[in-house]
Image (cartoon, rainbow, N blue to C red; front, side, top):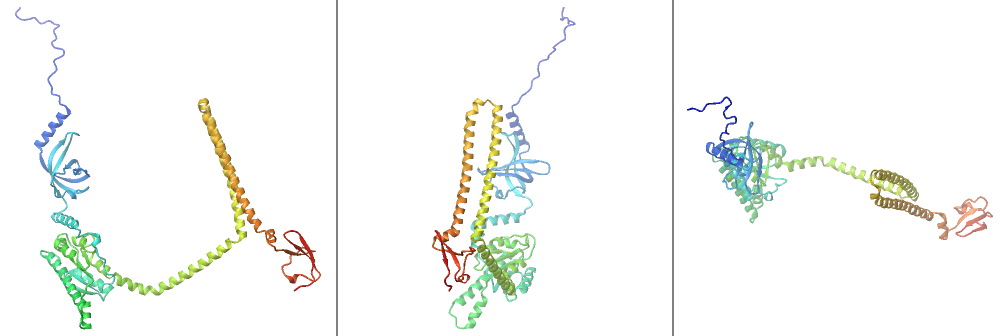
Length: 484
């Protein structure tokens, strides 16, 4: 036959050979995913909110970038020259530039950060933070260099715009609280290009003016009028202020020139820029920061204003103090009287007896309680002995029982001895107060022989009356021959 005949029992391959397949290890698969991400995605910009920020001792920073629908692991290595590294914190919205890759050890994709831009914070805010860090490192914000303000200033320098709302607020508060305060105005612009230089120049001008005034005062004076003129020109502090506004409006007070001028000022400086929520570099450098111009004026005039209220309230305060002194003296007198009453011997004896009764009751109560506790312990031990093999624990339990009995006996004996000692001490003190001790010291008691009444005065005796005198040892019977 040219062709092999096919039998009816020839069903072909019942189990076909296994098709070829490629099996990857976890490391190989992760490496492929890493190469694919780095090739297809590569360097990207991504925005989100920082959470779970963790700065390691190695200098690397790990955090998670998230939005409403997903999150991304990020790492900022120590060697990356990122300007805003120190400003990263939880909740900060940022714009990151980096390379997408896979951290093979955990099979987790992440972003290796190369650049950071803060979102929601403009270039002015970044410049503000950089200058703040620079000046803080130089010590311009150091608390130890802050000078206290004079309590009763006589005259102040005012650096602000002559047409702004701040000067009106300051003058209104000063007129209401301390009309006698002298104000020397150094007008300047507080907004716009060149305003920072004008503010710094005004601060220096007031310092130079004050230095010249002090120089004339310290030089030999030719007349009393010169002394008065020089004294009038000295300033106690400088107020740098303006009203509220945006960050751009207040930027002149964030310039380094203004900060340097405030730092170099020989006169204490108060900064009151913007509203309560506004903070500027001048606030940190100044000796005192006020929330608003009006608040600054109230702080400056607080000493005089408070003194005026104190003088007005002085009479009532004196009357109240005298009344308090009298009430205190009366209370002290009542305390002394109560103490004298408590120190009476009979009262002390009664209190001692009462304490003795309390101690006795407490002793019996403790004894009963200890007895009950030992009974409960004994029952527990008995139950445990019934549950376990007695031969193993019998010796230990006997020693414990004997020790508890000795401790109970010693405790009861100690309480009894203490009670007996206290009772003996009280009995001895009571015996010392009895008449036998008085007789033992040489005194005697004279009584009427018939009635036994004790005679306390010579007038109670009559001529011919029979008397009986009790001594420490024995008695003497006598008759009255005369009374004097």
